[in-house]
Image 1 (cartoon, helix red, strand yellow):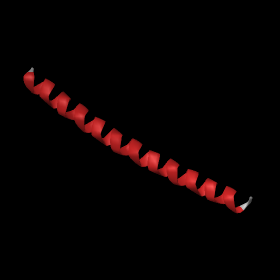
Image 2 (cartoon, rainbow, N blue to C red):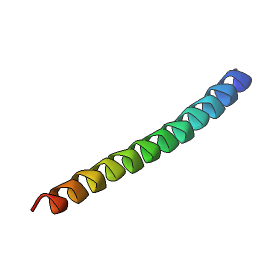
Image 3 (tube, rainbow, N blue to C red):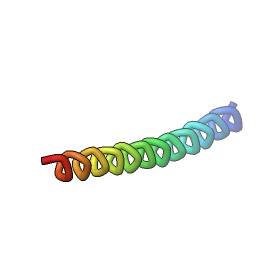
Length: 45
């Protein structure tokens, strides 16, 4: 029983850490997209 709990705990931590990295990457992509839109808006003033 302890092995199952240990394995599930490790699995949950691993999934949690990979989700954080994914969200971080998504945030950077959105930020770059916003910068492009802002640059285009400034050019067309």
